[in-house]
Image 1 (cartoon, rainbow, N blue to C red):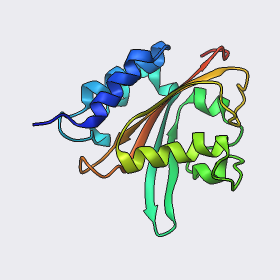
Image 2 (spheres, rainbow, N blue to C red; image 1 turned 60 degrees about the horizontal axis):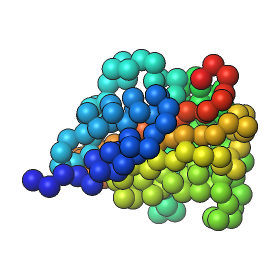
Image 3 (cartoon, rainbow, N blue to C red; image 1 turned 90 degrees about the vertical axis):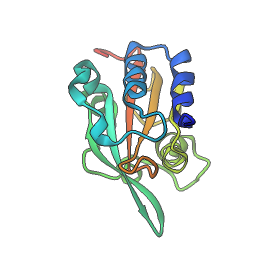
Length: 170
């Protein structure tokens, strides 16, 4: 039985992740990942690593005729402190001040990267400075977006961990 390609993406991210938050998150995602399919939301136990909760965001992927939308179901305290606007139970594309330019970096970081994760079923990792509207704009951002799929194939949720290097009380 061949391994799911997302496992290789998680291992690649683990090899370069700097923060303990991201390393712990990626290790947890690897540990719950079945060998031949994506994990489901039910496979993730939030209390397995309670210190991660403040850094997590869970979005529901909604597929429609106009494309995908991402509804924020859960956002941890650290993420809520960093966000310039309320996030809970709102769509990402309407929660932040994004332009209509698909080449806009903030659009790419916030929405387009999740669309790639939802379409490909592969974890996305980033570390660096980004032109993204958030309160800790002096800090380097590190994140991983991991796909979840009830049926093991079609991504229906994306679980993300964020770490803001240099942010207070991180």
